[in-house]
Length: 264
Image (tube, rainbow, N blue to C red):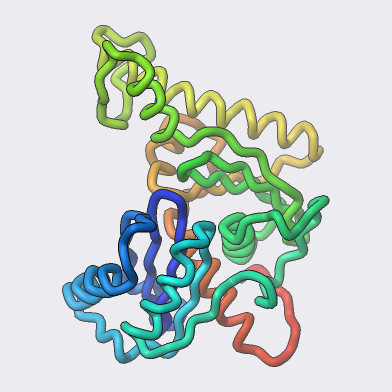
């Protein structure tokens, strides 16, 4: 059994794998004020609800873009599972060639998604990650990570609008009934959801024009299904792409010999 943690700015994705099968997945709020013991208590309860015995863990892998939380989840790994975790970062093998000007500045979340998407679907690819930011990761036919484009995420954009406009109230991020809203809630849902879908279509078209290839489009993240339902440019939705990527990284780093990720 392998436990994996993808520590993001808004949420911590937690996955438990039995071999290649994702047995359970959870999300915890990212909170730098929360100690490792509190995270361990929450996770212990979630695992127990799923009938998962934490002592069965053979390994733990962590990827984090929130440095203050990285150490806490390292502590959690040893407290809860009795395992020293693999932290994806400097010194860890990824199997992904990063073809950017400064590979060190590329976040581990970008590499995880690229590796997992290429493993599942081959290349070339555009990986859409609907998180705090909406990221457009570009993966070459041979699996190399070519770069990304980023825009404010769907939920972040909506929250900024609600805070800046005193007469606009929060609405559920739900499929709009139509483009032309007949009330404030419908108008906001149309602009937020359809507007984001139109942005996705425009960016995918621009990336394909610049790279000269019609890449497959893979969507991931909590809101991936919501946006994918409103556009025909998304080929596949895989909500747990980063967790799959962490499993691949853990397996890769168990081998004493250098190797690269291959398409399944």
